[in-house]
Image (tube, rainbow, N blue to C red):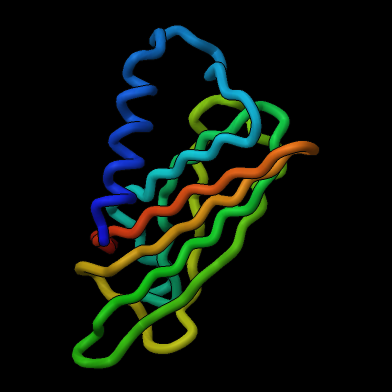
Length: 140
């Protein structure tokens, strides 16, 4: 089941690697979307939250939203939280977006966790989406 997101990200990486390094914007048409959840996430406020670094790319002028959920096993209990953040204007370039996720249950702790992210983007005439699920590390 994880092969499809990995395949999509691999394809996006191959396309990105084929572009000139000096390109100001990517030649994207419609509401193309790509997403990468990065690691490590940063522990905030003694575990009350984690900041998850992501990179998004979408066609210039598109708008969207990014949803991130983090789940972690904390000594047999589950720490989990999620957050939506708006992508007000896509630039056609790789945009770093740090998403701070507040736990709704137990406090997060340093160690491994599981992150799920969905990016939805739209223009007047089109829409697109991208998803990624992966293990991440939470660090102090």
